[in-house]
Length: 152
Image (cartoon, rainbow, N blue to C red; front, side, top):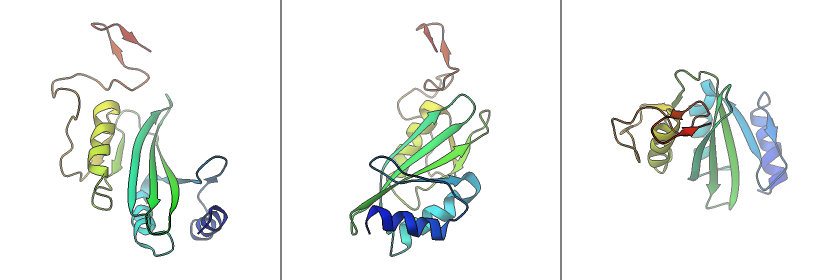
């Protein structure tokens, strides 16, 4: 499928979701409540077959978090970006997709370690780079570290 076909099919399948275009990728914005189901559909439906999650990151927008998933179909040679907005800054939670894409295990641990985003049902959610006794989430905009003088 080419980019236009992907966009048209996404609009048919998910008419209430915002779809952005304008760069290398089409971006599908998915509500937190729908994320797990949409992830499975994008992975398993023959027309998409997005079988490789090659990047997962998070962005702190001060008012909310966005978790950004870069997906690729090896068979069809197309890509899609999915963004999931999390409004709860005090307790950011998203359903794990490590059972859909195995590569998500590592990426979700990184997002947890640096942003504090919890992934429900993750098989091994613990800090990845920082020690278990580390206080805070260093990539959040409100993070302060008086010892190392990091202040954003």
